[in-house]
Length: 259
Image (cartoon, rainbow, N blue to C red; front, side, top):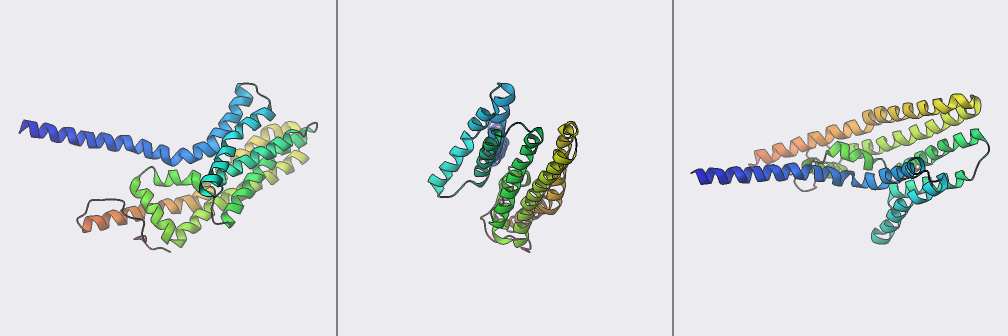
């Protein structure tokens, strides 16, 4: 009796430990594309420029290596362009070209706005093409590294027009916000004193980010998270009624209203 109890406890502990360990692994796997495509190039740029004292030109060139490799690898392996990596590469190229412009402090301050506009236009174009770029940053927040929620996302993405509209809306909001930030900053650069825009530019950027999160969350990420939660619950209840283990199930038609 004692041996049987000990064995069961050990197996249960092993299963629980395995589940606990696999969750961070799933989170890392979900966030990996965003880390490689966005965080790594931006982090490399600021580390090289501000941490190691490398020139802006060299920092931009070196931080472009990762997105350039990712873009080339995607084209060679899957015959498709990695959207986010290509966008970051384009932004770095534009920044490199603008780095040769010097002398006018207002023009140099407007350079950051030009970069924001490139990103905003790229995001809007991705929505028009049906491949919204901001999904890479939003999806990990919705699925939370959970296998059942991941499967629910796949079912909804394939079978719910309302879900796909919300996905496109999230990226569209961010594209519009980034373009609006560009316009406001350019107007401020050429209508206000330079000393004022040095600090006001950061305020405008922060306000734009807050608007992006609030409006994008209300119109896109929030409804998508609610649909994923409802779909996950509906699938679990279906499995419970059938007396089956609660699993994520195949990527078929969603159980909740497709919309």
